Image 1 (cartoon, rainbow, N blue to C red):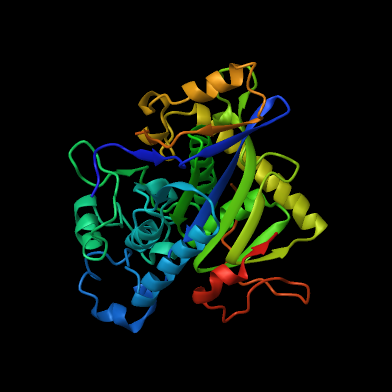
Image 2: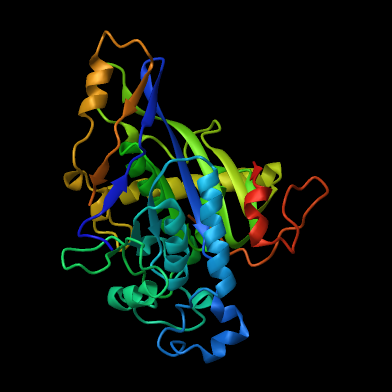
Length: 378
């Protein structure tokens, strides 16, 4: 069921292509909202753990089924996913576990992609964590997912990294938290030559999509909606042994950095003046994210152990040798299979955007069962 430490599982044959003087990795990021939540149904009133965990609802049976279909849709993309990182709230943990059953990947839990910690999301004035502690979380997950691997700490307990935000958390601070952590995860995955699945909450999905596409505004994120973003990222310069993937930008490029496909994420294009405003907001967010890199005493988004270079097993030897070899003229490099031990101001969008005649959005009654068949590019 798992072991101490954290794993990145690279693809069977990760292909890195030589383009000009740089080796580029084709990397994908999937960011998924959790499935249908029980506390939005009448069944919540009789749920046994309602009093103990009022803000940690499980999925409904339909939510479980829809989460499994989201996993199947991600598998159909053909991407060789390497790791799943999920919010520790039960609805996300169950969604991630459904996906893990399909993709056969381990799950790491990180509170930095957890729910916005304010009265709107929590429904009350809160003190302390609102999600289940690791032992209780495992007891709950084992009932439905005996074959899923959750990353564990040295004591053998499910490991949850990240920081608990202070209540009430400002919404723009949560957006910065989300954007910063997804950037960390994406860059770390690139340095491990792998693609990553992030299972989180709707506000995180919308925030990351809007950071990637500043001319786009997200109106609503359906249950088990997801975005799949793909890019060519520089990992190494020809003839060098300096890994640069960790420093490559995730949101900052002016040109189209990501090929972004959405399912169940309802968007609209914004006008010129609004786009200028969004550029300014994005610029402010990026400044705060850069400040975060050098502020080790921040209360949230400290670098977790699974992103620290000291906890990574070196594996670049074969790639470096390939790059330095003057006899290799093929222009691409296949890395053997391996499992590596690695150990924003916005206002909350409380409305759905109007759809125009040119909109490619899903209808209001879109069915999570068909999300994979309605994948759209923006």
